[in-house]
Amino acid sequence: MNIHEYQAKELLKSYGVRIQEGIVADSPESALEAAKRLNEQTGTSWYVIKAQIHAGGRGKGQIKETGSRGVVLAKKQEDVPTKAADILGGTLVTIQTGAEGKKVNKVLIAEDVYYPGASEPKEYYLSILLDRGKGCNVIMASTEGGMDIEEVAEKHPEKIIKEWIDPKFGLQGFQVRKIAFKLGLEGNAFKEMVKFITSLYNAYVGSDSSQFEINPVLKTSDDKILAVDAKVNLDDNALYRHKDLADLRDVAEEDPLEVEAGKSGLNYVKLDGNVGCMVNGAGLAMATMDMIKLSGGEPANFLDVGGGANATTVEAGFRIILQDPNVKAILINVFGGIVRCDRIANGVVEAYRSIGNIPVPIIVRLQGTNAEEGARIIDESGLKVSSAITLKEAAEKVKKALAES
Image 1 (cartoon, one colour):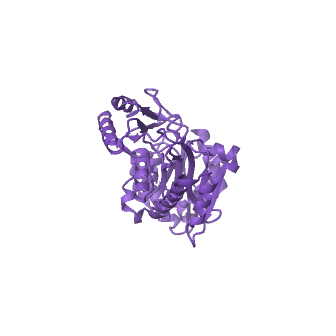
Image 2 (cartoon, rainbow, N blue to C red; image 1 turned 180 degrees about the vertical axis):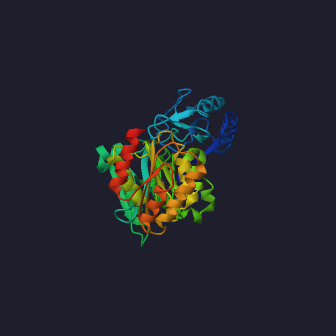
Image 3 (cartoon, rainbow, N blue to C red; image 1 turned 90 degrees about the vertical axis):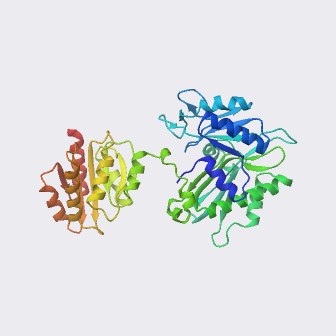
C-alpha cells in the first residue's frame, strides 16, 4: 500500500528519523495557515509547496490546467496561497502517471532546508527493500541523490552502494558505518548519517514495509542529515498488525475498479487490452493472459476470484469487467480443485441471469473436478456463453469472438 509523502515523513519521524518539516493543506487558505505555523515552528521564511500524489517525478511534472510544476518554491509567505491554488485541484502529469495524470487534492507546505552555511548542501540517495534473490533486506545508497536513480544505476552502476542485512543478526553497526564512509562523509555529518540510517532501518522493519526510498537525503550546510522526500510502500499482508497505518490508505489515489474489486474480495488490476479475464489463481491468470496474446488479443485486466469462487464473486467479477468499454470478450479460466467445475458453471449461469443482457461473448474454460458436468451446464444454459476444455480450444474461441466483434 502506497502512502503520501506527508504521511511517510510522519511515520519516519515517529522512529527518530530527521525530516524536512511540513504541514499538509487542502486549500489556498489552509496553505497560508500552514505557512504561518511552519514559520513559528521552524523559523523558515521560504516555503516549498509539494503536490501530494502517489507518483514520483513531481518536481519535473506539470499541472495540465495551469502549467505549474508539481513542486514550487514561495519566497514570500503571501505568495503561498497563489502558488498552492495553481496546484490544488489540478491534474499533475509526471513520468510515472502517464499522460492522463493524477488529480492533486492536497499539498505539503514544507520548510526550506537549502539554507546557506559553512558548507554546500549535498544530496544523497537511500532505499531499503527486500532482495528476493538473496532472501534478505538490502540497503542501497548513492552519492547521486536527487537524480533519476534508474539512470544512475544503468550508466554508473559503480555509484550504487549495496549492503545486505542478515535476517538472523539484523542491521549491524559496522554496516551502517561502512555505508556512511563510502558516501564520503566525515565528522559530524558521518555521525548524523549513521544515526539516520539506523533509525530509517528501524522504521522499515517496525512498520512491516516492503520499500523505503528517500531521494534526496540531504546533508545541510551545517551537517544535519534529513529526508527531503520519502516514498514508503507498506506490505498489505502485514496491515492487520498496523491498524493505524491501514487508516492511511487514500482510495482517491487508486483505480476505482480496483477499489470496488477489493470490497468484493477480488484481486483486480486494470490493463489496456480488449479481453476480460476471470480466473482462480495468480499463476493461472498469468498463463491465461499469455494465451490471450497468442490468440491475437490483449488482456484487459488481471482478475483473480480466488479458490472459493461462487455465483456472488463471479457476478462481482462480471460487473467490474463490464465497466471497461474496451472489453470485446470475456474469458473465464478455472481449475476445479478447491471448488468443483459444476459449481463454477452454475455460478456463471446465475450471475449472467442476475446481470441480464451481457453485450460481449463469454468463453468458459473449465478443467479439473467435474469439468465435463460444468461444460454441459454451460452449453445447455441457452445463454450467450460457450464452454472449452483445453487451452487451445479456449484460445480459438477467443480469436473467433474478437474477429466477430
